[in-house]
Image (cartoon, rainbow, N blue to C red; front, top):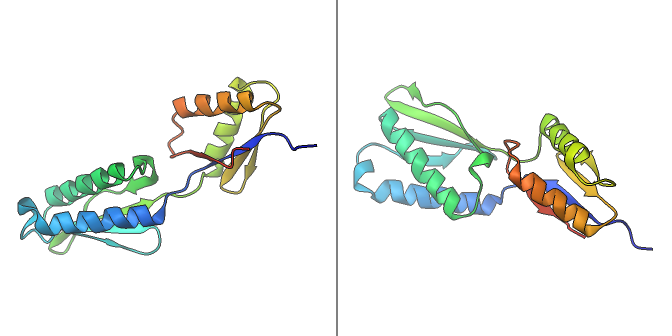
Length: 164
């Protein structure tokens, strides 16, 4: 007997794609005429953090826009980027960003509640760490759940994996 159809809801970002976006942004900041002489740069700060810096607050925000464009080109949702506010640090302005991975428990509960309340009958969602496993009797019910969740905004980038 085959197990019930299921899929996982995750929020993961391909680190290599983010790294490529960082490299492209750094290259563009070094080459564009409007960033010349502003000390604009982007670099990794730990495993999930990024730091943008420039001499003025406007240039830091412009560098952030360039980085966002690169992320979009690489199909990375901007919901996975948590950008802070620019702050003065000596002669430069810095902006700290964080790449968000995983689904927080309160958001996982909200997603689970949405599936329970509005999803087809017989579909269950279980929270497993930083992801959810959704099971149901029919594959059509699971596809209806995916379509429903794609239309909602839970504040995190959702991917649907391990559909079987």
